[in-house]
Length: 379
Ligand code: PLP
Image (cartoon, rainbow, N blue to C red; front, side):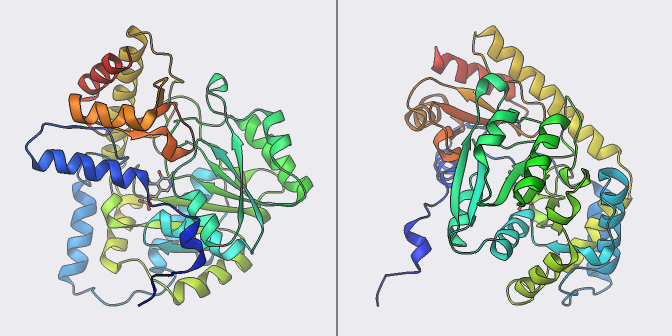
């Protein structure tokens, strides 16, 4: 049988995050006590009221296919959240529920990007944006971000990154891996350019609930942006629900309808009883999620203190679940050595498009220990 697969296979590498996670699992299986700072997966169980809602749905026998766009009540809860919290007036019909936001992003790119279309991605960037664009046949135009500006683009950076040929700009604030939370002025500058050059913005807001400094602004709420913004979010990170695979997407009705065609011919829908949990997460008590945010905030402070005591200058993550730490050397070799000899699992910056850095996640209660070992390895 021929092993010649589809053309995109030549352009896309397997994920480096998965490789490091596999190496860490192997060490753990061999009995090593590994400090796990390699995945952006909150180390907390989903709060009880959410689990109860899903269990109740199962016990009622709610196990069939849900409607492709998602349960109407869940879409209504999401539309209410977007309207009330994000200043994005949204109708339930304009919301699609997806199995995780990763699939929402995949669908958005597949729906918008035509062969040869230019897609601007600020880098360092989350590992999957570039492969998604390549799979769709688009051309990635990376926009390099500086540690000196806290990995936030300046107005000049934005201006030189886009043109009339730009089809789509991928925006991720708060950012994985850097933790940057873009200022309102930065988003206003981007919005002006999007209107002038007539391009779309794909806003990945998955870390919205995990902000420690600054405020979250949804770019779709800025003047002229409703018609050209696709907003993606999920319950994964801020609600400790990564394994439930619940994401959602909204945008102009024509876009949502086109995306619906893709969803109906691919995954059909997100799991029905998981969606019942999603409704409880959005409509139930907020305290458990606020505690989650406070815990990550405390860990962020510990990370910054330990690094600063060790003389390592790191842009302070203002949100999200990770920091991007300069290691001044071959980052892949650094991560492998840190894992093998000091038993701390991290991910090389190369995976996010920037050599000489590693991403460390706050998803362990051993942040202090892990960062102390990392700082020793840098010294
Ligand atoms: N977007 C960003 C920036 C992420 O970091 C992740 C997961 O790590 C995702 C999207 C996908 O998350 P999920 O599919 O769990 O909602």
